[in-house]
Image: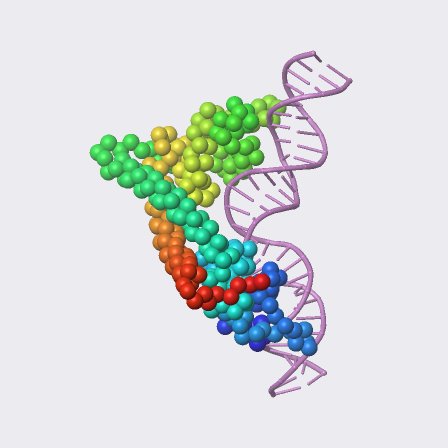
Length: 129
Length: 129
DNA sequence: GGTTGCCTTGACGCCGGTGTCAAGGCCTAG
DNA sequence: CTAGGCCTTGACACCGGCGTCAAGGCAACC
């Protein structure tokens, strides 16, 4: 499988695949032409990468998952190193959730306050020109 | 008030204040030396900016709030334009919250699955060297 | 006069995952 | 022979809010 086909099948671009290879995540053989030749298994790897990236993982975080897949596992997240990353990421996400929730409350409060002021009989706000 | 003092009082750096000025958010007069001279009111403006940035707003989003403050309002979020931005941001934040919540569920599920596999009598995972 | 500490503008670096363009090689079909 | 479609490496652009260094002016004190 050439790079264009893999890109299409994985729903991404050739540029992206070359980047993953540069980062040591994806492996490719070479044809006599110098064209990259991909094993069918790489499709799973690329999909795993894309899925993890979409979930907010960074390239470094993804390495153990790929290694886990390459070791012959059905899924990339069953190995100890992957589990560590999963735990860390879960804690991170919980942190973000907490912050976002606080921010949401603040926004809600400010919005309510602004609306209340606008609807009050005495309109106090002065707007820019 | 010179830039260093404002920076200290606002809890930020001179670089940051110059950047805000470059973005048209903060205003400064000039001494005969060419030194920036700040009005006391700018401290409030800078604090408003910092607070909004911390809440995830971008520079562009912040403009209406500053304009609102400059128009003489007690708070920057009572003007119509600010309210629009607040509404938009609230929706955005809700979107992020939804996504993060989904991701959290996925992480949780994958983590639980991995742990279950590890603790099962039949250890199926094969780990990388 | 020299040192210290403020100020000035200008400009590059970062982070991370791509888009995109350049310049060229390989292969196939007309 | 040529046109077109695949491939190659290399390298710059992006986004946003600064950090940080460079080179120099101004003010005040010893």
